[in-house]
Structure formats: C-alpha cells, structure tokens
Image: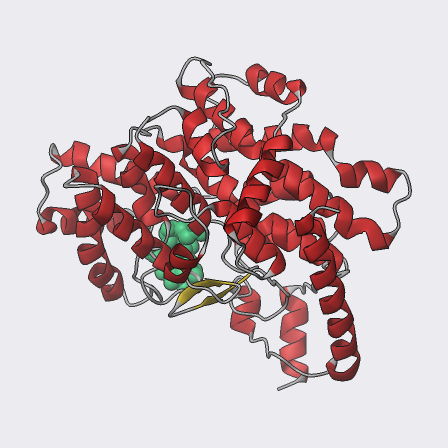
Length: 437
Ligand code: CMX
C-alpha cells in the first residue's frame, strides 16, 4: 500500500472506532437549536455535519487541521526558490492531519504525475462543445465524462463491500486531482488560444505544471501565485455550497467524479465561486465608464453606490459566516505587496477595500461588509496576463477539489450515511408553531 493510503487507513480506522464509541455514549446530546429564521434563511449556522479537513471561525477565518493560512505559508513544504506552499502539502495535511515532510510531498508530486492521464473522449467532448461555452460548464462536463475512469463505480458494480469504499474513493480522489490541471488547462487553451495546447512538464509540481500548461506567463512568479492560489482556495469547512454539494451527492455513493462535478455546479453560482469573475468584471466596468484606472475614492464610492441603487450586490464583499476581512484576501494582498509593484488594478482592489465596507455598513443589513477571497484574485491574475475572467472560477474549482475530495475520503472511511434533512411546508410550520406556542 502507498504511504499516504496506509497512513489514511490507520488514522481513519482509529477515528471511526472512536467516533462510534463516542456516539453510542453521547449520541443523544443536544448540540444546537434551530430557529425559524434559520429554517427560512438558508440554514445559516445550523450544526449538522462532520467535516474533518478544515474549520471556519467567523472572526479568525479558516484553519486547515488547526493551521491558519500564515502558518501554512510558513510550515508547509515549498519548492526550491519559491516561498509559497505546495498544494500537495495541504492535501496531505487535510487527508491525514500531519504536516508532510519534503520527501512525502515529493512522493505525492510523483504519484500524481503517474496518474495524470486524461481519456481522449474527455478532450473530444470538450472539442465538440460550441465556442463561447462557459469554462465552468466545460469543466463540469469534462469531469462528468472522465467518470468513465472511476474505480469506485467499477468496483461497486462488481460487488465491492462497504469496508472498501474508502479505498476506492481514495483512488478516485488521487486520480481525479492528478488529471484536473490537464483538463483545466485544456479548457483554457481551447477557449482562448485557438486550441494551441501546451504539453505538461512533469519535472514541475502540480501547481507549477498547471501554470506552465496555461501558458499565460513564463514568469516564475506566476507559478508561485498558482501554488498560493491553489492552496488557499482548497477548503472552507463543510457547509459552503460547493463542499456541501459534494458531501450530499457523495452520501448517495455517487463516486468522486460525479460528486465533484455536482460541487462545481454550486461553485459556478455568482454568490459563490463565480464571484471571482464578477469582481474583475465590476472593476473593468468601472474603469471603462470612468475612462481611467487612476480613480479617486469619491469616484469609486459613487460607482459602488450606483451599483447598489440598481439592485445589484458588490461582488467580492460579504460572507455567510465571516465577520472580518477574509484571511484569504489578506494572503493575496500580501502576495501582491511582495511580488507586484504599482499595478493599476491591484491598486483599485486596495482602494475598494477602503471604500466599500463603510458603504455596505451604512445599508444597515449587510452582516459582513468586508472583502472575501474573490475580491483580490482577478487583479493579480490580470497582472500576469490571465485576463479572460470567465475562466477564473475554473482555477477556484481545481483548488476546491483538494478539500472536498479529501473530505469525501473521510466521509466514506467513517461510513457516513445518506444525507436526508427534513423539509416542511409553510402550513406545517404554522401548525407546529401554534401547537408549541
Ligand atoms: N453587496 C450588496 N448587498 C449585500 C452584499 C454585498 N456584497 N452582501 C450581502 N448583501 C445583502 C444581501 O443581499 C441581503 O440583502 P436582502 O436582505 O435585501 O436580501 C443582506 O445584505 C443580508 O445578507 P447577509 O446576511 O449579510 O449575507 P448572506 O449570508 O445572505 O450572503 C453572500 C452572503 C456572500 C452571498 C453575500 O454577502 C453576497 O451576495 N456577496 C456578494 C457575492 C460574493 O462576493 N460572493 C462570494 C462569497 C465567497 C465565495 O463563496 O466564493
């Protein structure tokens, strides 16, 4: 058995035994009360699932297995000459709860390289899609088509016992993650560069190779950006829409491919991952209307208010859980400060950071006026030449696969059942309230 799989098996078997015993003893403990506001309001904050790979605090932001983003930047292995962490290291950490050694990360890098073959019919399907098909639609279709490779699906049809679900899910997760940069780069080159594809450079790491195959910049800093980007977007505990979708669909024993494709459908919504394209579109629109990138705060403020008055949201701001600036925003701001000097679009992102929160606060209804992860990414990508913003959510999706698929391995290893919450009609709610007044 490979070293990561062996470690995962040992850790998950131990936790499964511990959890079962714990539930037997404490299973009737009440952990939450649910109000009508939560029932009607998108289940905000209802404690109702187990997600081992990361946990979100409203003020502090995300912690992956207890480590904050600044700690990950310091502790995760990196590649020679690059200060940013390797996403392979984060995957290892999420899967087995330990910061890997450099050797372990090198092993994972090599293992993914061996698994990174994409079936021809996936490329043929992408080639058959009409010009202008949104890259997220292409990604979802391509992941679904690649499901023909699913080890879980094959073994299930052959009568796989429950005790082996974790193993087949592990194989699918590893295979799919290894293939995703090739699929995603293919979508990019096909959509914006006349189908001139760039062969992988297998001497590079997972993120570095992805940056190479995108072919937007031969600057080593772009590879560094991709390593950071693919690390910080990976996971945001289990209740966010893309993660929860993967969890829900996976609970039916749909394999990793179908579960991830479903999660990508969630990520493709403008209130979630698509916000990263909406942010730069918003900034481009503002620059076009005002005729300059040299904007005053008053001009930006007026444009923001006009957007709000027209009944739209300010993309990249607000969050369902966070109540402070998103540390993923701050990590990108730090990156931009270290690597980029005086870029007009980066400067606008920083001006928006000063202008937007007081305006959103003044509306009196926005619970979190601060920037989220999507507020910054576009301006940095534009700086390195990746200007085709309809592609941005695909980058988010490639990263998100690391978190949701490692979590899916845990779900199958811990034997979590089919998810099935209760819904009610409004009439039933009113009757319940009356009877319990
Ligand atoms: N601009 C304008 N209005 C906003 C707002 C924003 N950025 N954020 C919240 N509001 C509004 C909501 O639309 C809601 O208005 P109504 O009561 O009129 O419907 C009100 O403020 C209360 O919303 P909330 O409780 O503060 O926020 P929610 O938990 O309902 O929604 C989110 C969270 C992210 C959907 C929302 O802040 C938003 O629409 N932001 C802009 C889109 C965005 O950046 N999404 C990306 C999030 C990160 C990610 O998943 O990638």
